[in-house]
Image (cartoon, rainbow, N blue to C red; front, side, top):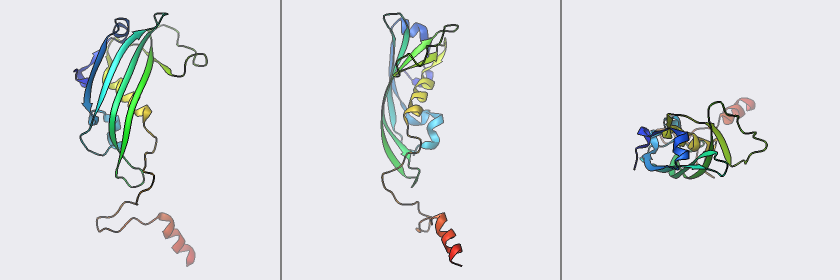
Length: 164
């Protein structure tokens, strides 16, 4: 299995030759995601497959699976989030016309083809797009101070001012 941090591809060649690359990596390799995570040492599995359709349009199929421990935006504790991504990216060569988004398939996203495409960047982009904006538990407690007391609502202080 390939190390994702060391994997760079010529995206058009990869698609035209119908190559496949796969592996797994620690979640903390995703630097743009680090502040949303709780440290747990988990990993994600990935696979990138190149394809061309009947019209010889090149595509990259991105698959990512695993479980992330996101930070709940209410209580700041770990929130298990199961991730299963299947994305189709249409490669647009330099100088070629971009597909008209109103007429094209919504399940396919166009991206610029690259001679030196980082697979880690592709996977990280897809993971970021798949995550909720503000992950949180269905119900949870407010965070506690070191002394064990819970944080008071900022509106409770306003209510006290109003009574006086």
